Amino acid sequence: MRLARYKIVLAVVDFVCLVLSFYLAFLLTGRGRDVSIAQSGMHAVYELAFISVYSFVLILLFQSNGLYKINIVISGSRQLVAIFVSFLYAVAGMAIVFFFVRASYVIDSRMIVGTFGGMGLLVIVLYRLTIFRPLYVYLNKKEFIRKNIVIVGAHLEAKNFLIQLELDNIYGLNVVGFVDDNTKKDTEVFERYRNLGPVKNLPAIVREHKVKEIMVAASNVDHEGLLRILDYCKKSGARVTVTSSLFDIVHRKVPSERYYNLPIARVSANDPSRGVLVFKRAVDIVGSLLGLVVLFIPLSLIALIIKVTSRGPVFYKQTRIGKDGREFNFYKFRSMLIGSDIDGTREKILHDFIKNGNHSNGGSSKVVNEKMVTPIGRFIRKTSIDELPQLFNVLKGEMSLVGPRPCLPYEYKVYDEWHKRRLSVLPGCTGLWQVSSRSQTGFDDMVLLDLYYIENISPWFDLQLMLKTIPVMISGRGGK
View 1 (cartoon, rainbow, N blue to C red):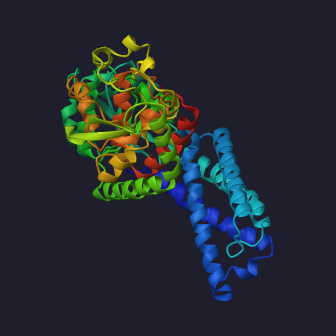
View 2 (cartoon, rainbow, N blue to C red; view 1 turned 135 degrees about the vertical axis):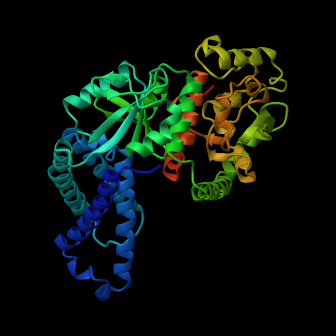
């Protein structure tokens, strides 16, 4: 995803401020003579490497705590809290690492840790709240910074946003007009703002008006229509934000930026680059191998318990649908009695769930005959331990560590065309749906979460989802 310019500036200056804060901490604790690489040799090289890596980790913490979201950047109180929390985690993490690891070859005084925490917090707060924030707001209001945008949709949602922008434009947005299929071209939509044409003309409209961002506020379309709009948006090359009520599930489950009180979901304007996909596959190979090695003993113990507590094989093999509709053998630990997969009722309920929502199953996408679950099966299903053999599928290239869940053949047969878009990438062991809703959401919303992930694939997004999977597995939230 192409980042907004202010985010790049903030991240770079944050990094510089953090590195300087480390060296100020060295000076204040009597380590100033060791800063020069020429004087201290390899010790200073280790220090420089550590400082650079840890500063980068802090940038990731800033990102995780929303410090590059526009609504946080322009809010003094919320930004202050987010900065404080980030430094609290950073200093606590560093202290824990140095408690367990002898790191005198990097930093030989624990006092530096506390000094850096105070110094870094002070520098970042002063820079962001007394320099960057007021300067950014001032330049926007004086129209020194302006970004041309078009609004897709011409209904109440879009007009309400425009009214707020007219009253107090703190985001540097210059609306050049609307784009709507149901309004005649050049018709006035709201005050002086007119319709620039139909959605199919978006690429040409973006070029003509030098548009940097497209805001999709079309709520009078179905899911197929929304995805069609996003396809045209991607062809334009402009940044894309979505505020449509059809994206409500994304706004509720994914920490969102906001324009005023309006949640927005950022959607990538480009497909994932080949480099990103190659890196993702490399992570899959290394991660699955590492997981199988580290978990060998607990996996063997679970296999033994399954074998001695119920009749049948340890592993359950099932045909699933993967990338581009291809079938593959999907592995799990067996958690149910033999014959439990021969269930016409389950197929009927899932068919209804896909076509009509989740009403037939009490609001859950998982259909389980509890009488067929083995004693150990209840535990491994609740914690998703039964899914761990899928690391073999990842190693074979049939699945990824992160991605949409693979579906059953009879589910695929009743998919609408827009549902099949979730199979445009490798299915995953975990994903956005699993960590945010798991079995507690409707099918269309589940697909939207998967599509949001596909549109925003990145190594950082994958890392966030993998880290969030751990507490979900421990708590068993949404598992059946």
